[in-house]
Structure formats: structure tokens, C-alpha cells
Image (cartoon, rainbow, N blue to C red; front, side):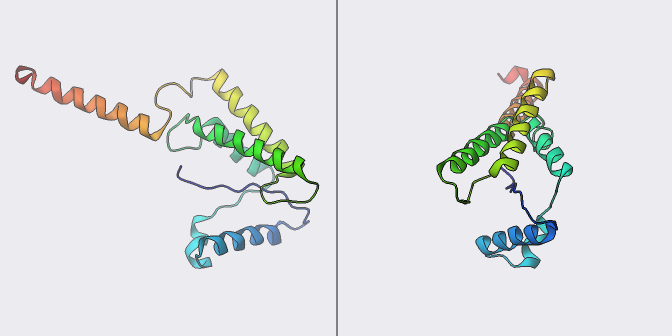
Length: 150
């Protein structure tokens, strides 16, 4: 996987303090300074966050178009968020809450719809399978150049 994403909901009326809290947590956990980490962070909120999740779940926003691994990761995240939320009434790390759980569930549904109605999952659906297909194509081209040597 080439990225790490955080989805959260906050009761804050102004989104900046909540986003800054998440960024501070990531800096603390990574040991990187603001200057080192911030160029690699991007933030979506509201409808833009949902659109991004739908693109990711559908395999549209991945290294290999149609990659299915991301959808299974979203499913796993959803299951984890629900499991944690049901264990205790207190807010726990990893607990998504109702808003995030609904958003992840909608992302899963969107990913399934896109895969059912399109051919996005056909062919290479991971970086490794794309690499193998490319290697086979190139090897066959090389073998055709020298048929007498076989």
C-alpha cells in the first residue's frame, strides 16, 4: 500500500482545530516535524471527503486502476469501527462513530456498485499483477526476436 488515510468526524463547528489535532497526532507518532510531514498530507472535508472515499473504494484513485485491495481495507476498517463502537459506550481509538461508520458503509456500497456495473476490475488489479503481466509481455517480445535460438 502506498498511503495511509484517516477518516474522522468531529463535533467542532470549525473544522480546523480537529484537523490540526489529527495532524499533531500524526507528527507525534511519526516523529516528523511539521515541515517534514505537512507537504505529504492532504485534507478533505464534507462532500469532498465522501467523494474521495468513493473514488478510493471504487478503485479509481489507486496506483493500478481497479485495484480491489483498497475496498477490502475499507471493509476491514468499517468492521473494526463498528466492533469497537459496540464494545463500550466510551470513545475509543479506532471507533468510528455513527457518522464515520455510515460513510465507510456508503463507500463499500459504492465500490461494489462500480465493480458490478463496470469492467474496472478486469485485468491487472494490483501493482504486483501489473508487473507480472508487463514482464510476460516483454519476455514474449524478446523470445519472438530470436526464434532460431530456441
